[in-house]
Every structure is written in structure tokens, then in C-alpha cells.
Image 1: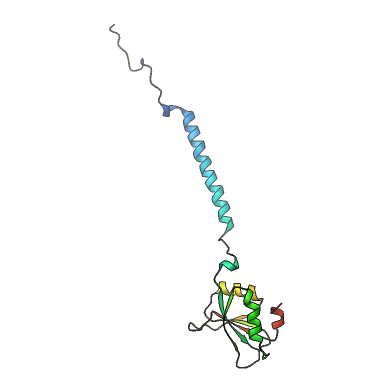
Image 2: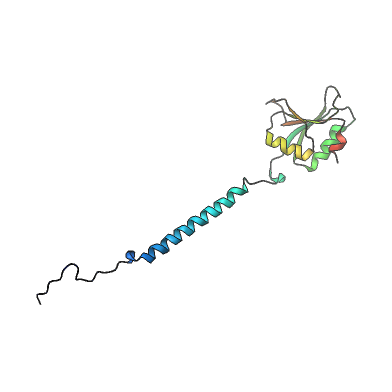
Length: 151
């Protein structure tokens, strides 16, 4: 009974973390998760920023000016803009009826709103005359080519 057990004679207990298959399975789960993240992030990055519909954006404030001298043209054009996302704050005439081409004048609006307004009206010509005290973001001066834009 005086047997002595050496350190190597005793059978060792197997711990759960000593099994190599557990490590393989854990690595496979982690790699699958990383691959999923890379794929889903890549898809959402390609989509870009969310685009809003025109009716979800705030109305653009404009002043409509008759630039060619035809009677009641500014009020007729503002009636045409009624179904668009445009808020006509005032109507008027230019000092001289010399405009052959219609034009948008930027008063205090930004370039994104200008692009929206160009898309809604069809008027592509624009100029800038910034005035922070103006009552509208843009002026629309209607020229003799107004029939192109009132279709």
C-alpha cells in the first residue's frame, strides 16, 4: 500500500477548453459574424443618403415677378405653382419688362433648394443676388418664354 504515485502516473482531467473542436467552432462563429457585418455594411454604404419625397420637404418661399410686361402673368404663374411645393409670398412686376428668358434669382436660399426649384419649375437659368433681409428665398422672374414652363 505504500505505492507512490508520480506526477505522470495519475490520469489528468480533461477540461472543456482543452478540446480543439470547441475552438474551431468558436472561430467559425466569430468569422461568420464578421462576414455578416462586412456584407451588411457594404450594402448600406452603397445606398447613400436617404432621399425624401418632395412633399416631405419644406416648401420653398418665392416671389414671382412679371419680367416681360404681359398682363397678370405673375398671378397666372403663381396659380400654376399652386400644386407644387412652392410658397408664393408675393407677386409683382420688374421695373422694366426686358426679360426674354425666365430666370431664378437666389436671395437667401441654398443650392439644394435651387436644384429642387429648377426641377419643379423647369427654369434652368439662375443668378445670385443675396439679400438676407429679403422676404423670400428666391425670386422667379418670368420672361417671354413663359409658355415653356407652364405646361
